[in-house]
Image 1 (cartoon, rainbow, N blue to C red):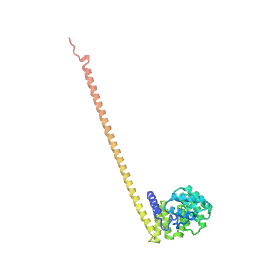
Image 2: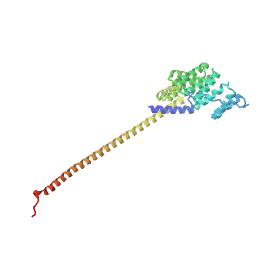
Image 3: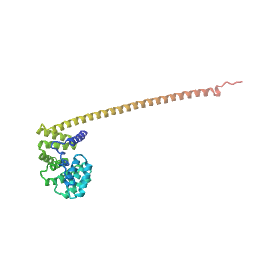
Image 4: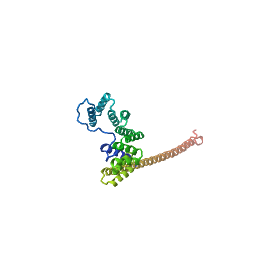
Length: 297
């Protein structure tokens, strides 16, 4: 079932990336910029921040980055600018640069739970679960009711194997049924298909109208069926290859036996021919001997 688990994890992660889950884990992640207000004075810092966020929303990340960097040179004390740069670099996979920006933002505003929420999630994406947990727990101390901090911490704890703590936080954010869905997605992302199915089943037992859980179970069933079909095809291919190798071996053995028999027959013929030649030479020799010759006078 290893292949099934791997395929399931990839498929579920793709679904999360495109649609998110029900009040779910992964839905928070890194903060997306809110739609900016109408822009007034473009020389004003708030207006420039609004333009940069609009560029982020439109996917114009190079332009947004350039604008943030220009603002940072003029307003080095502003903590929002390195925060947004950290998010952009993290989404691009430039983790070293992201970490530097997040650190800078926290130097300027040490108690900012939103920055801690985003840096914690960024550290999670880097596979640094212990550091991510530390950042997010600090964020939770600063803002105990911050849903994004709780959600991101629940994700990290789930991936670290701290299932009960993860589930408890998800319950606070989204309720009992959705909490089981979120935990199911975490098991899916870890390739733990059977555990994921159990979680989705628990969610449906609580709320039988929960589409996210039902869709996930259908997906798991489809993936399992496809994995079984692939396994059966691979088994048939291996069996045919084994039979083919056996047939080739038998043919080779048969050819070898024929060649050996032919060589043996030729060898026997050579012996007979040699024996006959010996007899002929003996007769000729006797006929040429003096005892049998006729004297001519």
